[in-house]
Structure formats: structure tokens, C-alpha cells
Length: 389
Ligand code: NDP
Ligand code: MG
Image (cartoon, rainbow, N blue to C red; front, side, top):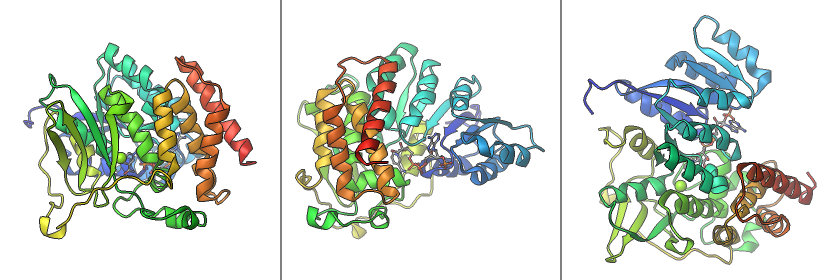
């Protein structure tokens, strides 16, 4: 990228989270290439204010309206616009003044603003996998119609995307998503039944937000990623496989029709896929630590333990069933993970809640966007009633 090119203006949805703050690290190191246009937070007003004063965006959103006054007054000496409330996310997503939306809100809440940006034909750097899990058909169809490029930030999907560069004419035989196995790799149900929140939050290779950390411990994250891969790369369910790779060095693989496998490798650091998505199609020089074979003499691969980590099987079932089933799975999982994080249910109860909810909510084969919202609400209510929340 030549320095004569205008800076890319970035809207970071969920700037106060794990992906959001790492995106700001990337932008801070490459202020000659990028500038911040929009920042959003759910309720972390203090960090949002700090970020806004450093990066001077055009606008910020604080979803929690109770925090509006605090943000407004802290930024009163600047010309930064301050918005509050859930609807404000869509309002700023509708701005013409940004080039790339970095979608890093966690969960279903990311769907509406991301879809708004897709509808405007904006480039999306997508971390928020739930957007595709819930409504992948609508999001991808809209992206096609509006010519909105979707560049994955999720490390596995970034790996696959990178393997596909230059392969546009070559059909994919299958993709293989690698999974670290999370903190409970090798454990059995008699151990998992007593697992507590703090232990489940300790991921061996990645430092991430609370929800995705629990999803990694239950392997639901990999299930959501299988569904995400189906939509991103236009695959049949049987073309998406998972392998456990505890070192998290091979980020995923693509197998082509000649049997050749391409993999993308590197140290586990989300700044790399974030930077790749923002810089695409270019690669940006950086000084991140480099991989060293002496530190990783063995890279190992094994089958997932489907019997113990039943969430993976439930996600595969949702992937094969299609319709609103992935949306139901996602909603039940979000609320069950929330309850686990609040110490209201046990670790294995997460799977039980997801399974019962999937059995109970009616299947819709080809839902409209409104029906996805209804299914999400219905599944949340049902899951909450199961847990007596
Ligand atoms: P975090 O929990 O760390 O951050 C979430 C961000 O979204 C915060 O800015 C938060 O604001 C905001 N937010 C939370 N709930 C809402 C809501 N209801 N409405 C609006 N904003 C909200 O999550 P992560 O950064 O870990 O993950 C973000 C997304 O990226 C997820 O979809 C995850 O699956 C995906 N991802 C994350 C990876 C990682 O390494 N962390 C890797 C691959 C994918 P506040 O801080 O104010 O609460
Ligand atoms: Mg991932």
C-alpha cells in the first residue's frame, strides 16, 4: 500500500471488547493507513471515553442510556457526536463516512448493525460470528446483491480465506477447522460437572471475551464456526470438518479437488487476522513475535471427543437442519452461557438447555428476518424458563 492512498476510515462496533481493543492496537501502530470513524460500547463508558479522546472519531455510541450523560460531558470539549441506545448502532452503521465496519459486538446484538452496513455495500471485517450463525442466508445474499465484501476476522475463517486467495476457479473439496480443545481438553463429564466459571474462562492459547471463552470450553465455539464457514465459503455441511490441534498454530486448512491441502499458520494472536482484514488485499509489515519451530517441535492433531463435548454434535445437527435451527441453538446458548457466567447453572447444563430448546421451538425452513428475530426471542424465553431465570 502506497502512502499516497487515503486512510481507511474504520467503524469499530464493540470497541471496548477483546477484538475491539486489539483492533485499536492495530490502528494505533498503523496510523498512516487507518483512522477511527466510529466507536461503540455497550456499557463500558470509561473505556469508551478514553478511546474517543485518543482516537478522535466522528461519533461514539453508548448503548446503555444511563451512561449517556457521563460520555457526553466527558467529550463536551470535542466535536465528537455522542449517541445512546440500541437503535443508535443502526443509526451510525448508516453513516456514509466510514470505509470498513469491524463488527466486534458479541452475540445476536451484532446482527442489526452489521446487516445495515451490508445493505449499504460497506466492506465488513467480521468478528461477530453470531451474525452468520443466526441469519447467514440473508446476510450473504444481501452482501452479494449490494457487493459488500465480507472479510472474516475469526482466525480459522481468516486462515481459510487466505488459503483461497488465487484459487477462485478451484472448487473446495472440504475445509478443516482447527480447534485448540479449550481448557478442558481430555476431560470427561464426571470432571466437567463440577467446573466453575473462573476455570472455564482460562483458555490455554487465546485471551478473549467471556462469552467466546465459555463457548471454547464447551466446543460450542467450533460448532458456531462450522455454521459460519458454511455461509462464508458457500459449503455443504459435509464439507466442513473439525480437528483438535492443541497448539493453535495451524489456523485451519482447505482441501482442494486434487487432494492438496493448504493451511495458514502462525502464532495465536488475533491482531494478525484483524490486521489482514483491515489491510486486505495487502499485507502490512509488523513486528509481532514470529513463529519459531524450536519452541513447537510437535504439532499434533486428534479427533474431537463428541461424546463428552455434545455441543459440537448439536451445532452439526443445527447446521444440517438449517432454517431457524442455528438461530435457536445460538439464542439458547447465549442465555445459557450468561446463566453459567452468573453461577446460576452448571457447565453441563449449558448443553442440556440448548438441546431442550432445539427440541421445543418450531422449525421454520426459510425464515424471514422478522422470523429470525421471533425465533431468537422465543428460544431465549424458553431457555430462560427452563433455567427458572
Ligand atoms: P467482548 O465481550 O470482549 O466484547 C464485546 C463488545 O461488544 C464490547 O465492546 C461490548 O461492550 C459490546 N457489547 C456487548 N453486548 C452488547 C450489546 N448487547 N449491544 C451492543 N454492544 C454490546 O467480546 P469479544 O471481543 O471476545 O468478541 C466479539 C465477537 O468476536 C464475538 O462474536 C466473538 O465470537 C468474536 N470473536 C472473538 C475472538 C476473540 O479472540 N475475542 C476471536 C474470534 C471471534 P461493553 O464493553 O461496554 O460491554
Ligand atoms: Mg475462531
